[in-house]
Image (cartoon, rainbow, N blue to C red; front, top):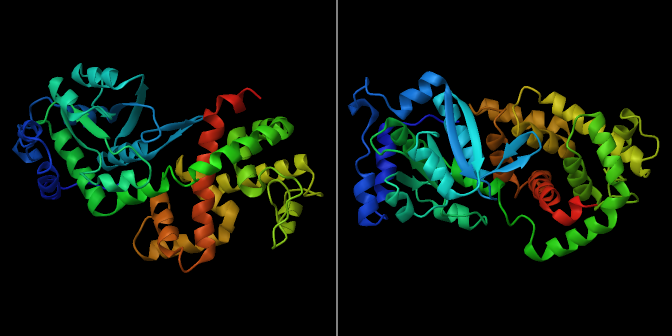
Length: 370
């Protein structure tokens, strides 16, 4: 998402490397600016640029990546994807069973770098180079329930790919991107004590409506787990739910939206799910110019606030010189202004909770047995 500068890299790395043990510091300080490297020498950077592909391996966990059907999301994945975007190359993102496999692939040249939670000692023992995936901003991860031991690991410190990556990471720390990304992927959005209640609700109600979610999702080429997550956020899967503003049903449709979607009875579960899926699909179509997973987040905010409200924020972002189609820009605007606007606060809670419910529904063995 953001390109990096060698000078910015060195400034930020100075503060980070001061916290490293001597052996790691000795390894890290051999990082050199790109222009000092013989341009004719074969290296990872040239390989990535020439092939137009950045290959990254990681172990799937809540901090790195979550696969949502055909799409991926997660703090680590988004950070790596933004780095690939800054290099103007495609990302080839692979998951492996463990950190040892990831490190081995880097050592063998089968991956340009790895994103792991392996210790710095282990990384050094493999004669590899690693640094914090947050430029030392560990608090942004820990306060959001993410693993602060996340590192990016490269084959050699002297490779310009290592230098540009460290520069990108530290620039992302300085401009607030890492903090915002960690905030969105907060693992504490739903309180720990609430999960037992959520699990109980899903176990009781999901069997009743799962067939309808599956059938409707197939009709619109959607993930039924996502539809169910929206339904749970909207009504706890209670078809007779009614809000103070008059929206009702499992998918909590307004009267106007229900009519537009062909729903005659909002409290009928099948009609509500059908209408909600159709409306969500329309929101996805509206943001079809935005790539996944961002498109899902835009569609969810529009489902909650209305597309007109999202249009208004996008216009304000554009007037500020920011990309209105970058989810982190939209999220940062909502999050920054949520104290003065209740709708923004609700939208932030809405999209982050649905993400949490989606991940829970997909990874809960007992629910998937239903």
